[in-house]
Picture 1 (cartoon, each protein chain N blue to C red):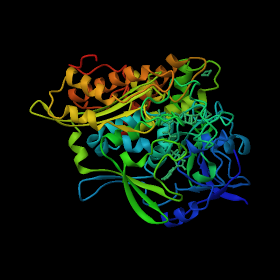
Picture 2 (cartoon, chains in turn yellow, cyan; picture 1 turned 90 degrees about the horizontal axis):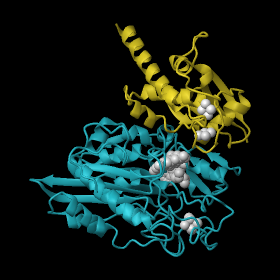
Picture 3 (tube, rainbow over the protein chains, first blue to last red; picture 1 turned 90 degrees about the vertical axis):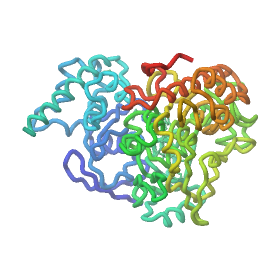
Length: 165
Length: 352
Ligand SMILES: Cc1cc2nc3c(=O)[nH]c(=O)nc-3n(C[C@H](O)[C@H](O)[C@H](O)COP(=O)(O)OP(=O)(O)OC[C@H]3O[C@@H](n4cnc5c(N)ncnc54)[C@H](O)[C@@H]3O)c2cc1C
Ligand code: SF4
Ligand code: FES
Ligand code: FES
């Protein structure tokens, strides 16, 4: 039996037909839609490499059944840059050496974007480390990651203040 | 993962009817169910997706003063709801000490209550496990069992209930609202989970087709808001299951404890309310002496089930510390490291 669903992926509405209900959001993105930015580290919710935003909230796409997310809006790392300009979180990861091999990076960045939107961490490095603990980095780039999130968060909030003024 | 039929009901009645078929399982966010299905631990032939049901995603204040949490409310949304976190700060702290931000954004209240044990033999289909395959034995007994239970275990199963949320709910006397083929009923959290006995595969009072529709915190539970904490000992500061945890809530008047609510996590086969220890505290002056005594009483029946005698000593200290922190007062803001023993101690709290 075929199952159909509608997803808005990085701003574009897609009608998707699945021949198998077992497909996760991660496998849908990577294997069927060829959006390979989200990575499969553990496939079991433990590493955060597959982090994406669903309706603006960060989740692990490996433990999400695609068919269940019918009607959702999804943002992946491919959808962050606007007109070729990097998202402030992407730029901050470069500026602060927030990665080495880069495998965890799309998940780290998506998680950081979600974290900043949650607005729970303010400028406290300890709160940021805690809120990023669902993203494992085998290369141990944690220091740079924390600095990148602090910097991006500050830039995004001053940007918002500027826009409001 | 096995193939399954996917069903998306549009009402509770439809969901209950669909799940009455043998081999069916309810799907919340799937953060536990899909994990277990990927490992071949559970193989449901039908998934009944609850996530599109209307009306189960609200946090409501009822006319009798109780708070009702719909089964589809996300763990993170509940913890960050300002009114909820103010009334039940230890529940919010317990939620925020569990899993990761991504998992809490997805995980539902109903799914959290129904999550399965993290016993490594349960999750390994090649091992003997009475919970997964009744009658096959228990490889945890005599195996790697540092993380297993010291309270409530039997010769058939020594696995710990993994939830943090449920520990705080249990302390505060939460009630589970259930809907099933025979209609609606409600069960106190303390009666909802079953001891393993010789049927560890039967974990809750839910019958086939029954689902959780909501969890309710009674009005009187909010009276403990000023002095309550959750403390969780684990192998790293964040993103790890409890080895020993405690929810402690106190009502303090004129310098004396009027009433206490206590429950333990990570040490027992179900979220473990300790009413005998609560009784010890009623009328006592808050402090090291009373709290250590309560901790002794809470663990009076504890017995190692293997290589885990340390949990008795650890559990007592966690409970006494949680009480010290609760007596010092609920912090104004959620600590940077929720429930962490490594967070700075509030002023006046002595190490126990
Ligand atoms: C890496 C990792 C770390 C974690 N760490 C922690 C931790 O530290 N502390 C902690 O407490 N938890 C932890 N968890 C577990 C997490 O809290 C659960 O996976 C989550 O709460 C389950 O919710 P869900 O909506 O995804 O449930 P599902 O996975 O959808 O369902 C879980 C079970 O509940 C049943 N179910 C779901 N909804 C209902 C309902 N309304 N009525 C009846 N049955 C229902 C399902 O059939 C299934 O059996 C962790 C999980 C992972 C993957
Ligand atoms: S402790 Fe319980 S869950 Fe673990 S192997 Fe034994 S029977 Fe299974
Ligand atoms: S791949 Fe999803 S959390 Fe590791
Ligand atoms: S940069 Fe290599 S895993 Fe994080």
